[in-house]
Length: 295
Ligand code: ADP
Ligand code: MG
Image (tube, rainbow, N blue to C red; front, top):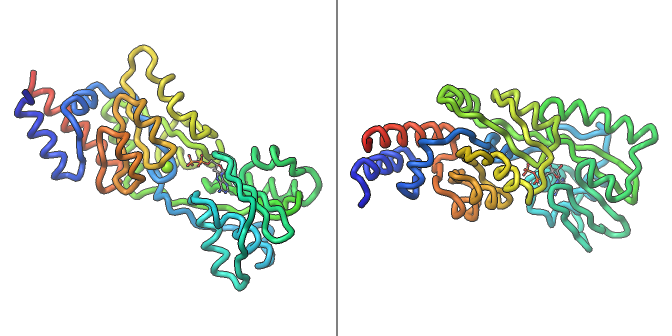
């Protein structure tokens, strides 16, 4: 039978907007040693916007061409680019032969043009030269933007690098205090992301996280959780996205952001209704109080 204290514990959690699915979850939370936080949408708001466009005088037609290719992507970065282009005077066109490469970017044909948008790996795989004065200058500036915690996204048209857009996603207001409170409770905090290392490390610094696992392909997140679980370490994972679902299921405790995707919530033991990371602190404190009462 469920002890009364567990019922009280989960009841208190629900009142605080922290839905704990089972007594077992409440128990695992008590032994939590390592907590892995997804970056985009978990530590940050997940509502990226374009903050910089390089070169500064990029014409609206080119921007529209890039956005036209991104229209078919569901990626938040793509949405930011489309929104930005819609604010300009040029109109978007229909794209054909659209392909998305997970963790890298997209390629599509717009009219007579072949458009590639994505990170450095995407450029490499698409054989876009990054030598030559223009490209080198663009990439140098893009490294500066990454150091500010922005995600640089490169765009090439017909095999030539033509632009870099910096996309910023604000850190949630309570992320830093949540990390500090979790550390005070003796928990090791990791950040995991498909984003580039420099961008990830800059965001990690802003919220006080020292351990950063960056440039992870979507299917790689669960494998990283498994590695951290060696020696029976109890590992929790907090995430919001479709690509977080396998990692949430692999973790001893999967914790979903309530405003995230349904599949992330379904793969989890705990749901943070408000989406705030301080909800994890609430869950841990409840589990500790509950386990004290059981013993
Ligand atoms: P995250 O863990 O931050 O959600 P993803 O695995 O979704 O990361 O993406 C990793 C990286 O791949 C992005 O930071 C970006 O550089 C690139 N990328 C993925 N999809 C797109 C896209 N549609 N347009 C541009 N870049 C993309
Ligand atoms: Mg995410």
